[in-house]
Image (spheres, rainbow, N blue to C red):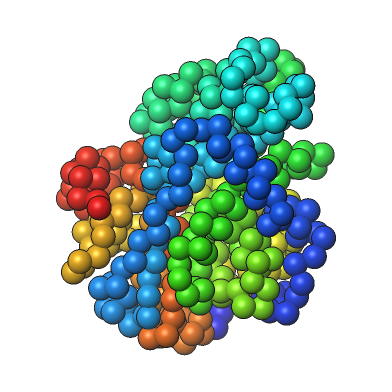
Length: 394
């Protein structure tokens, strides 16, 4: 099936090996180093994987499971995994620290880490810098919410607001960092800048490893959201290397206005989004892919799809006001995008058949962020405050 919002990846083959070009981006072998760095964070522990049997029955599916990254060591989003690990890795490789444990007891006031972010990644870099006693400067696009800015400031970062979109914030960050000798911790890549984005993505593989261990039976389908592609490449790359031909069918999800992966898949090479990336899903508001992720997503993802702005509130509501005895999940607009995609797919008979979504399907979703950054939007969608919804959680 090919539609205006759903298309297959013509380059993907189930038997294709996870070879050197893919392993150079993320690799299962890198997990132990990530775990060693995260051990420096006392609050770190695995996030829960929730089962939603009542919803699965209504949708005619065998199982729906949600990996809840809103509970990632009190941070509220998966981004903490990548930002903290990348900061720690830079410090370990540029100081005489014998290991990550040695880093945690020191301060590094001469180091300044910078990044561009719509909110969560900037907070992660700021958190990493604070843990290891360094300075951070975070460049925010104009659409970043006041709540997300305040959360970044609370972690000791200096904020630079950029009058423009995410790509404009990236450009300004690069310009100022180069002039002042700061180290950029970006989750997107560009020619000549790839090592640190690889570290960021390697950090994200922790959540994929946890989910696979918690799921019981291997999922048959995984829906994962994509901005520049870092999370999607980390999750799908990990599953590809670990499971090979047994890996789940993968669907990469984007906002219609920020469909850079959808357009890249259509053209067979990295391409710009068809829209201006104006979306409530701020964490996915990207007009360009990270080229580094093409060997994994461009060659290994199965399907690409887009969702509309109107798909977001019902998905938030489905998670926050669950059916039957299903657990409550508090998700922001980017966090609920996988659920929004699943609801859209299940409502379309042709799409269901094309993807083999039926009573035997076991679907894995990732709640990539909580709702602290867009509390008013969450309340309009669910009729609950973030605090009231959080109180309902098990």
